Image (cartoon, rainbow, N blue to C red; front, side, top):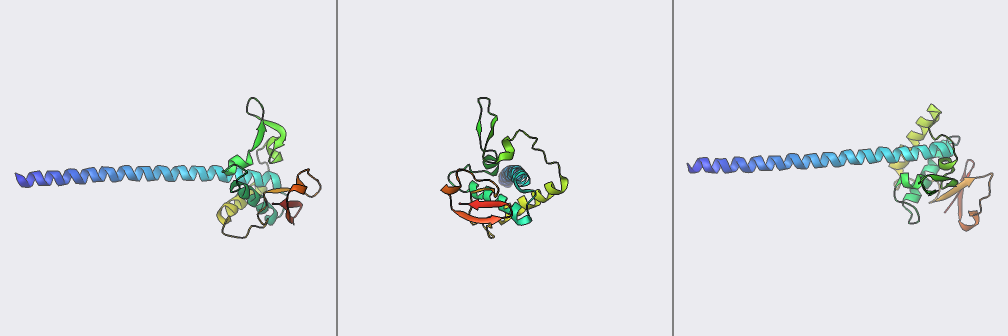
Length: 174
């Protein structure tokens, strides 16, 4: 009788431990899936920004725009996620971005934001992945820039920042 009670207790403890282990594995799996979904969302935002801001630029120029986006994510004056940085804008009373009042002009220029050049879109997605993988590990071609503009414009804010580099038709500042 005593042996049966002892075995019953061992089996119950083992069963409880197994259930706890399965529950813990499910929590970890959910966290991994959540992390993957977040990565996909942030990657999409970075790829869209690279595509719209620099698809006509060289590989270096496109990645530089990606690095500026990432530099903003890690700068105290900007939001802390890629998507929040990309979609940062002044909003109207309904929560829609005001035309020409966004950090990145493509987001509030009134045009369709869906990529229509498959080759350039694939490039932008590849560069977004490279930037997300390389950030903090490999050289930042912009030297820490958080701002840039096309070389053919002269924005009011340019004198308030230090110029770091020119890549293709963009001038970068920190």
